[in-house]
Image 1: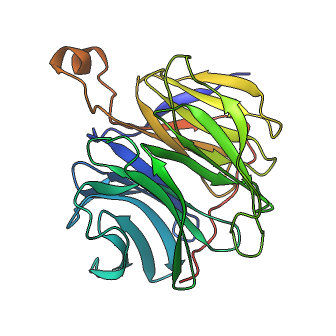
Image 2: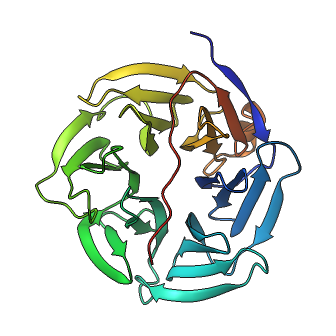
Length: 291
């Protein structure tokens, strides 16, 4: 089965992450975490717009047509889409200078799972939080690099990983609140294999698509935890996928040149660019977050 891989945006992000597609405006938003940038691009065409951010931010959720919720090193902030104004909304680890935000995704019910990690990937410094209608709770602690936060289409399962461990977990969830209702279970053991489990998204059929950092590929996992497909990518450090387009039938994948020296960057000129994958996939749109 052929997969068309092309460049969606040739802007080289230091650490491209957190792609989120807004179907109402046909716009993909993503971040250069280290560069403190928010990027956006119309999928139908146009230039990549790069905006400065006041701090390191890593994820975005749509609140309504006029507002977005941004996840950053000081917590949650609201962004006015029309003016670009960013205002603090709810602090999360704002008093901890060691950590920043990383992976995050909206549960089908509108709850937001938010991951943090050490700015230097300090072991055990990160956590995963649940945010819903103004309330925040810490769900998991002692994580080094939070990644792969995503959910089954019916909201009964959450997934996450600590990239430093390379073990992908699943947790049973209450579909109405997005809160765990059971213990974590091992979904896939990637330890000892090439590359690191990075960002993930789950399609409408329950297949989990994971960007494998350091291995230049995107993997697909069946709902029962089998790796069923691997797609080669033209850059070594893909970081996170997102479904895009009017039918959510294509994938955008961010990437990074972080930790690459001059020789490595010369050998990997597309590092940090955002890729477009044309493949038969039944994706789904991110829900709006309920604040």
